[in-house]
Amino acid sequence: MTPQQARELIEHALAQVAPDADLATLPPDADLRDILELDSLDFLSFVEALSDASGYRIEEDDYPAFSTVAGGAGFLAAHTGTS
Amino acid sequence: MTGAGPSEFRMPSLGADMESGTVAEWLVQPGDSIRKGDIIAVIDTDKALIEVESFHTGVVDSLLVSAGERVPVGTPLALVTTAPAPARPSTRERPPAPAGKEHPRPAPGAPEPAPAPPSPPVTSPIVRHLAEQRGLDLASVHGTGPAGRVIRADVERAQARAKASPLARKLARELGVDLARITGTGRTGAIRADDVRAAAVRQGKPREAAVRASARPAAPAAAERPAQERRGEAMRQAIAQAMARSKREIPHYYLATTVDMSAALAWLRQRNRDLPVPQRLLPAALLLKATALAAKEVPRLNGFWIDDAFVPGDAVHLGVAISLKGGGLITPALHAAAGRELGDLMAGLKDLVARSRAGRLRATEMTEATITVTNLGDLGVELVHGIVHPPQVALVGFGKILDRPWAVDGLLGVRPLVTVTLAADHRATDGFTGARFLAVVERLLNHPEEL
Image (tube, rainbow over all chains, first blue to last red):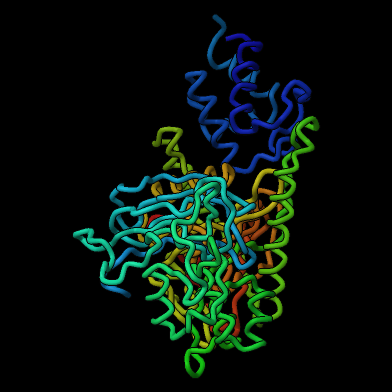
């Protein structure tokens, strides 16, 4: 998938765990846990939703890449191949 | 208690501060068969929507309060016929007014069937039975029902007034306890101040541990929501009351120990690699399980301090401090945690957090915790000095798991460490017991395969 597609998937997954957050104004390099105050359960839900939507199993070792929208989008694009 | 006749399902007290509640939703209808433990109503306490279970097995006879109505704690909400063969309650002395109308709900537009003479006041058999049972002269009771009829609530009020000491009455007001729900232990059944305190303790409160600021930065547009504000305010009050009481009454002692989480995290990581993502475990699951097993092994910390004595819990029901998005804190119980598999505990935790935040908890979850755990690690806090939630006697706190220098076998290494704290009621246990508890937690976390 393209970084843009990955970004959309990420935003969709984030909307599920942080329904009140204004994702449109979220800086792509902001730390998601900080800015959305995600606790570890929220983050796990985010990873679950994203793994499900992208079809790519995100391992715990991959978590650091997903601390920002940009990092996560880059990671997913690189690991799923561009279509 | 009574053999025949319907049992009452009453507005439960879901917190010491709760004076009244609104029936948000009925999940049963008259004629429905219900079993003890079935969720039959959803109660709005201003703080949350709580699903309330029936204490009886039987058939719903009638609903006395309709959805949307706000009534004081203790008000009968429904009648449940508990006899296996649902017989009508005694027909021996049926009064002119039909039975089952003795509830406080004003029946708009419904004319009173019999313009009863004022003396003796017309009452239903249930109310008369109640008055007899409690040794009250009905003629002396002020009726607030239709046409001045004495209704059940009047009897209960009268009895409570008659038989409570002035101090008990003052305390009941302060603690938000309904005197009508208390069985007095004084001479001739009078309610004493101690009875009120014990009742307040038994009713369980909204429990909250340490300060957990957690207002999620909501979209600024979603700011002004009066209902939510009111709820936030009510919750703040509840937290204030419970915590002030804890600090006033409980002589706390505090212990802390630092645990090397290397073994636990390595074990977890390995296990998570083999599990589907939705079944992935968080370190929190290990911490909860270790706490539950330690509480089982050191049972003096698992239970309640009631009436100057320790009452052990029937199992380890872990109160889990959960921050609510938008502020506030709630500590519902994970039931029988010591005997549950890690995966089950993790699923239970997820479910509890989701339902807490959606405001859908059950009454038993709100009132049955035997020990509480607070985990502030997600916020980067290293150490929690908790406040015990009365009537419990211990609170366990976990800080953030941090990589730190640590001496291992005479060498300095970097290890993931967590600081585990115990705040406990010194009336119930001494530091020695607390130290044993923390030692067990540490041992278990060092041997995660035992969890």
